Length: 409
Ligand code: AMP
Ligand code: MG
Image 1 (cartoon, rainbow, N blue to C red):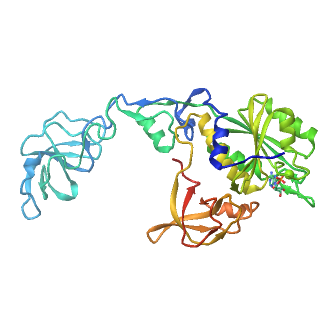
Image 2: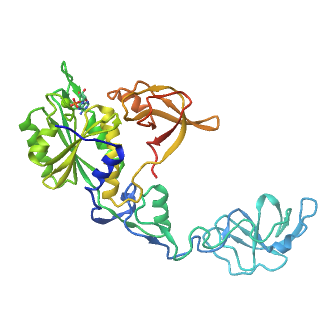
Image 3: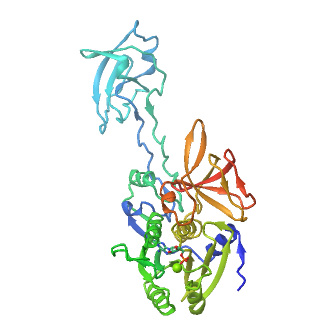
């Protein structure tokens, strides 16, 4: 069977075309963290609601401070005390001041605050030791968000700062995209569960867990289907059991290359509609994609790094699209590659690196051997340096794009 060789972008496009946004649901804001907002949020208040002080000090008329300095203090009469959370009706008139705390609304008549460090109390009076302009240490009403303004856009992934904004606007719930349910099936006779002991020839199933954690990181809900042996019957049965669990996507790992026991593509082709591609990338060349019983199925490669990188490239954008996100791809940054790397097979190479800002530039350091089974170099990495298809060698000092694994656009 001749398998088409696709670019990463072509494969991404074909995968993404199979997904549409799911339904939306209201959830308490703390359950909305990491999920995608499905409504525009307009503010029905000014934030802050009143002009208020950004310092502890004295609310004054700026014109009363003209000429004030350490050698020429200006004396004002203190007519009140204003902690945060209270208002003062009393007007600040020429010659008077109100002692004010950070966050307290500016009293009528005052147009500036002199910070406490620039004052000296003298009984009921205060000595001002600095001249200030109108607006000094005053946060105007609506300086953060104006009433009626768009505070949060639909399609935004909710981070702690967006949750804080929802709280500031008085929302205890938010409407978000439903969590995609993603079933994960590991394949291979060599695999044992993480709670089993290792017999000769066996390794633990790492992939279901790294992928499940990636699903959770992107707002989805993993459904672990366990391990299928390399037998057509068992593989078919486990996939079908997964399809019965109300899932939006089924992922398998392993069994998609060209060995005798690579049965995933065979089973998927027999039971559903399946394309098998080679993607011009490294790691992660083989990829099976199709659907069974109307559910999209992605057959990811088995090597522990390949399966994670393939998830990054194809599953992550699909999960975000299902949740209605605007930005589907990680941001990249240009960096200097600090270690050389060979690669001669005209595939885009995603190289595990640690990206750091050193000596005034972004620099990408290889995190170790780049074999597709070497999970420890993924553990040390916070980014993937992208070596283009048409390079067969990247020297130390080359400028490359680097995909930031721990960032979202
Ligand atoms: P395969 O594509 O099935 O030949 O698998 C490629 C490599 O990945 C083999 O060395 C497998 O043992 C390994 N592998 C496959 N599945 C897993 C898994 N779930 N966890 C860890 N390693 C795996
Ligand atoms: Mg296998």
